[in-house]
Length: 266
Image (tube, rainbow, N blue to C red; front, side):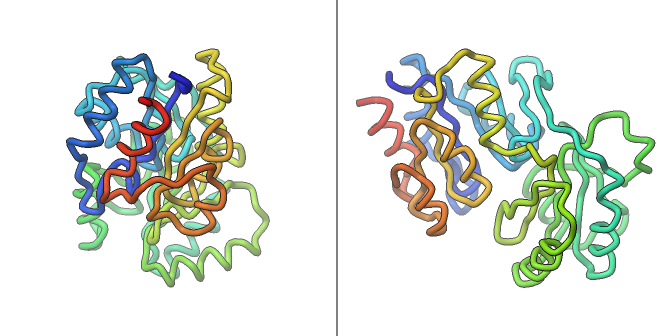
């Protein structure tokens, strides 16, 4: 097999639009694994709500979560690497979010905190239920016992676009990426899926040329350009496709299966 390390995004890539993991994708993943390929999920989700997909596919090994801000070992949930960020620098962004009624959460590798868990909107409740996350109320910065790895904002697409335009004029101390139509993530400046994948490949002594990555959105560009072969889903924005080496089918047409069969199993 030409590729020893295969990184796959979750939402919009591995999963269909209704967030279903197809039998076709599962079978292709199992076949690649049986032939010695190491498959890791590389997602904007937290490890907490990504590990169930690893388990459903019978995958061991490693998971890259929070858009590369944390890498964990599946077997024992140990955090192998994380890019920690200074929470105090988030204060102006939190103030902006409060003033504009933009929902936000603060994440450690396995924890999630919101402004006031008792006052979550219906939309936020639905989102957390959908992503199988139970948040807690945000403590004071000095009360955090684990490193903060990601700050996420969630709102209507046009409001998010305006906020990102405004924040782009501020002095930058974070890597800010749009991870979905309604989401943007703030991380340490060096945190990205590409850097996390690079670190994992070095840890496993796998050459860059033997790394394959499949993704569909702007937060996937860094891993698509790092990998020896970067594959964009056909449902990707044009900028993501332009950054990739190849295009596969959409997430609703088993594009992951098609890519694995074409580049790993033939």
